[in-house]
Amino acid sequence: MELSRVVDTSAAVAATRSRKVKSAELGALLDAASADEIPIVVAWLSGIIGQGRLGVGWRSLTSLVGPPAVEPTLTVDGVDEVFDRLAGARGPGSTTLRRELMTELFAAATESEQQFLRRLMTGELRQGALAGVMVDAIAAASGQPLDLVRRAHMLTGSLPETASIAVHGGADELAAVGLQVGRAVAPMLATPADSLADAVTSLGPDLVVDFKLDGARVQVHRRGDEVRVYTRSLRDITAAVPDIVDVARRLPCDTVILDGETLTLDADGRPRPFQDTMSRFGSAGVADDDPTALLRPFFFDCLHLDGVDLIDRPLTDRLDALTALAPDLRIPSVVNPSVEQAQRHLDAALDAGHEGVMVKSLTGPYAAGRRGKTWQKVKPVHTFDLVVLGAEWGSGRRTGFLSNLHLGARDPDGGRPVMVGKTFKGLTDALLQWQTDEFPKHESHRDSYTMYLRPEIVVEIELDGVQRSSRYPGGLALRFARVVRYRPDKTADDADTIDSIRALLPAGD
Image: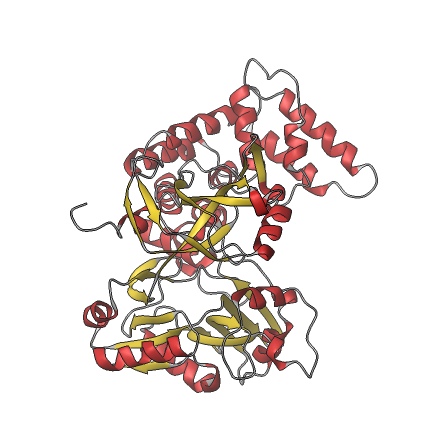
């Protein structure tokens, strides 16, 4: 298959907000691809390079000059082979080899192909090929049942792997996909509740209310003495969290998959600032006389225990397994509370320094990778995880520092983040210095006032509300927005959507 066919489909998908049209365009492309090309094409249109890191940075790509090719000649297989060679370049002479490979590749690419390759190789390819739409296209192209393809994707967490199984293995292999201890599963996510009373009423009477800890999401896998720990974005951080590994190895089981949070606590048991928790990731360990620096895991779900997959079981069964295994590691919770009892639990969570509570139905299965109504989060203030799109150079006492942030919400249709406002409030001197040091690593371009960034950094923003506004592309503006903290545990795909922010608009507005 010619690369130009993939590029044209990418442009067509980016040009429409219609899920039906997106699915049709992707399905037609996959229909035309060979069985070996499908996983590659699926990966690229999902913004993924199968080889991982290629050793080619943004500056190397922008330094490539020369006229583009007039006619398209590049093929999917040919480009994938170049990526293999780039990823495999090691040792003396590797820099020169990469430069030669990139020069040859871009000289053979048309202008639109060059743009596509640059965006793909820098992680900026966001043309709206949503996972759900791609799953539909994989099912159509492979002729396999949609429910089997969807489930395989949930459990593998990989669209290219799902496509390969669907094409090469068929229905039997799709049906055989299950939980695999040591392979991360896309985490189940929660939706914001309108209020605690609404959440308790809508999910009751069989429900549990958990503390919502001010920590980082972790998924812990153990088989024998082998332990793997993953973030909510499925990044393997095992080597960076020896405290959690040690706790997992002491559990009385052989195999287990646990979902939970980790954080550091003060001597009185209160959570330390989120930045303290994140700074512990990657340190080699802590001194015996500094227990407050330990990363402490607390769990709220058990997906597998000693050979038994629990992911399809109701939450009550999964909690029974968790309680039997590690009762002292359970997140504080109350079962089947009244609204008044749930409110007291929320008050206790806030008094202890945590964010709020999670209200969960006890009858629901674990919906991997989905944001379902059976889990609802309740927090006393409006906070959103937004993408930093740029930052303006400061003035006065902030001269020389990157200050005023450009904020974007995630496009639910898979396009680029939608700008919804700016803020410089809540930025400490330490954060100003960090931004000024860190943001250039994510720069896409700049003008005399602003450094614009690739959509990679997520920041948690607290606000009083939103209002209609024509000033920003999202059609609304944030009211009294202020920085709470940066979220290195999240990617742009974890950011809140523009729809979730619009939901704060007053009724009838």
